[in-house]
Length: 347
Image (cartoon, rainbow, N blue to C red; front, side, top):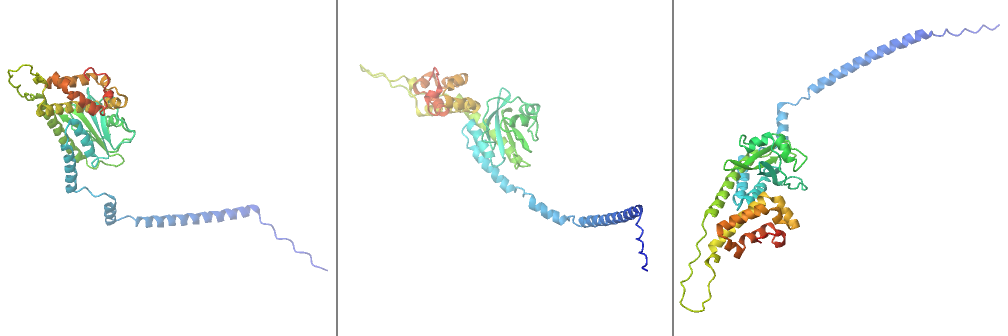
């Protein structure tokens, strides 16, 4: 007789299985946490050994910091800039040369002429090509007013004045800036703005300041030369020959219309100075006249005043006969096109 089959093992209780699993997961979690803490401690210990020493820092600094400009190089740059501005023949030419001389010393620069107490953009270099010269004045902020009135020698930080001036040229404000006054007879006649553009610092602010002081001195020198020419009396024309007792002699030209070379040279110099001043202080009107041919309507009071200065110095007869002032205006302001002068009564 066959033996009875053995009974199946008793199934494990579900709660017991869950308890065993939970104990095993807890142990695994403790082991994972211990391994993680040990690994973290080892990593931090390793990182502490990666701190650069002073020798490495010095080496990195020498590789990343641009070398300071040597005194000899600075002197050469300043000498070159001074040579350029010292060759100026007029105040307008001086300001144009100043901007050219600033190109190696400052990434961006601009000159603002003071008109009725407001800085008006005259010219610039280094700014965007589309930045156009604007005739409108900039109401001076308190820091600019201190500069204009001589209460401050310069502005060396970004300020409301810098924002107001640079906004006429660009929406981008540089990190480092400087604004210096150009003075004549202790009076501010213009402001010079320079900034670092994309650089963190202005490369040569001390050279720019030295160049500004030299330019102010040259402004005074050119103005003194202009005054001397205005005050100098014209050379007397040669005396008319004694009349000869002859009949039907052709009368000579009146002495007032005779121009000797010395008088002509002085008259031409004064005309150039007067006309260059108009080009300096009214660049927008001159540009518009060259394009549209209406110089006299745009600058009638200024042109009449400058012509009156010339006539007071040399006489109406000389201007009427030789048109020295008129021809200088047409040549310098109208590109030798008389039609661009407009309906001037004396032209």
